[in-house]
Image 1 (spheres, helix red, strand yellow):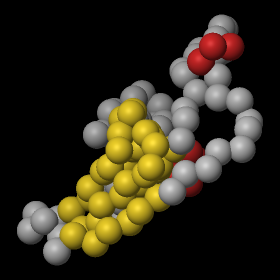
Image 2 (cartoon, one colour; image 1 turned 135 degrees about the vertical axis):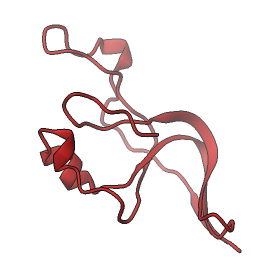
Image 3 (cartoon, one colour; image 1 turned 180 degrees about the horizontal axis):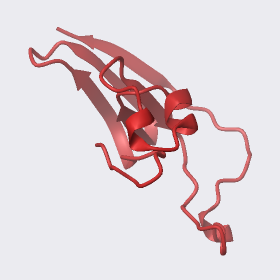
Image 4 (tube, one colour; image 1 turned 45 degrees about the vertical axis):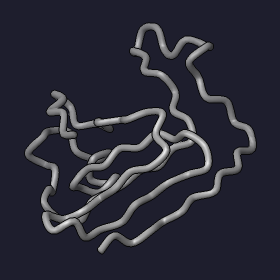
Length: 104
């Protein structure tokens, strides 16, 4: 899912999912599912490292996997325009049921 942006930033968002599996080469891992569609992305560095890195070489890769499960995600914008109102996620209560299942 890696996208080598000039300045490191969040990447690889997949939308409208019911489940996602993270497994090793033998098929062992975890399956995450929700009772409603969700968005997710995964990367092999920490969110803190990704946020603070200014250059790609500053990413500390190859360790654990960071998995983000999101109920909604705002659209992208730019510094001159920002995010259009129709594509903003507004603060409001959300309730989801998440199921985590081991895979053997």
